[in-house]
Figure 1: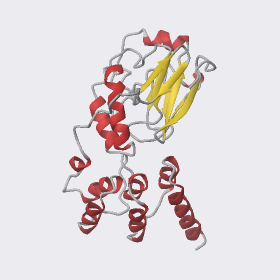
Figure 2: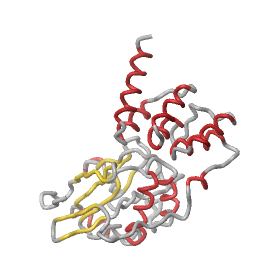
Figure 3: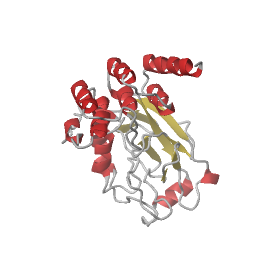
Amino acid sequence: MDLGGLRPGEVAAVEFVGRPVLVYRRAAPDLAYLKKPADASLADPAGENMRASIEAAYDSSASLVWARLFLVDQPRLEKTPGRSQREEFLVVAGWNPATGCRVALNPPSKRGKKLASFSDECGKGDFDVAGRRLRDDGKAPAAAYNLYIPPYRFEGENKLIVGLAPGTPVPELEFSHADLYRGDDPTHDLIIAARYDDARTVEKALARGADVNGFREQDGSPLDAAIIGSRIETVKMLIARGARPTGRSMRAAEFVGRKEVWEMLEAMARREGNR
């Protein structure tokens, strides 16, 4: 990205590995805010929940690839005041780690005293100019996760490159999707299995009574998970077993660029609407 035309207070977006990355050029009030000591308005000022948030990335639509990418630069930058390589620029993944919903820049008139610069478009969280999660009404959220930091680097004054530098290895994770199964919660296991295209466990979870339309706030539904991570055969199988798409399902298909799934769900919605 050429940052030369990005003015203070503006944000630009670029797609990387199928997901949005936001680049925000901080204005003078933002820089002054970052010089102040962290206070009680921040849910995780020191980044203590970083590992849990990366595990959540693996346990969500962010996928294995993104969870590993967050281990490149985020552990180091999490401990810096602005969570960034340059004070002037914030570079973050463009979704809320706790919900998967996109985040957007708030206009200055809506930021309030806490400088809530970014907000989850689902209305589930606010973040400051360093991408740090803000407390809700003085209470820390159940998943107090700061915005993710993708790998990136600068070349010269205005050139930003999102991605790995040549020769940089991608760190391995210390856990796998098998670690996420619970055994005593077949619906949870169905969602995880659908997300990681584990067809055998999908069948086992359904046989154990998993709710094919079960919904979890952070995970979505089994169908949502399959749309994100499984072959279309698994998506069709869940629908044949009674799974019903929702608006979130359509957004998931659009978000990860699965045109064939989106068209199938749209056709289903038209048929049901004509009944």
